Image 1 (cartoon, rainbow, N blue to C red):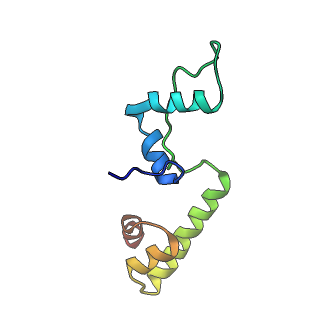
Image 2 (image 1 turned 180 degrees about the horizontal axis):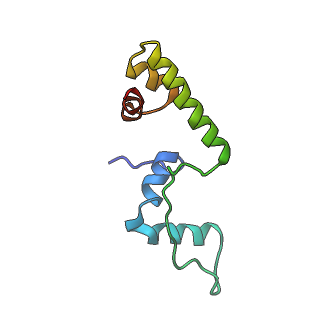
Image 3 (image 1 turned 30 degrees about the vertical axis):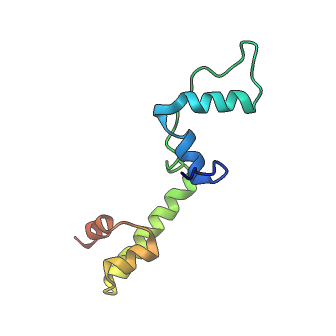
Length: 98
């Protein structure tokens, strides 16, 4: 039987990032951080690691992507190519075609 190497980012997230096994993460953090004498971590809330940060500059980039997509549509490019260039999903691109 092979085990995942916890030094690998994906394996670490799989082992310690599961909300069903918070006790494993709490134990790990208390051990690594050497918390004791009533200062241990007893509860933890896991956040979604894939959330898009709310940074004002990103709004401009998103709007730029829409403009690029609109221009690409007017030039007759297909959805797959526009998606590749802008990062927008096909549904977003289709909504711009209407």
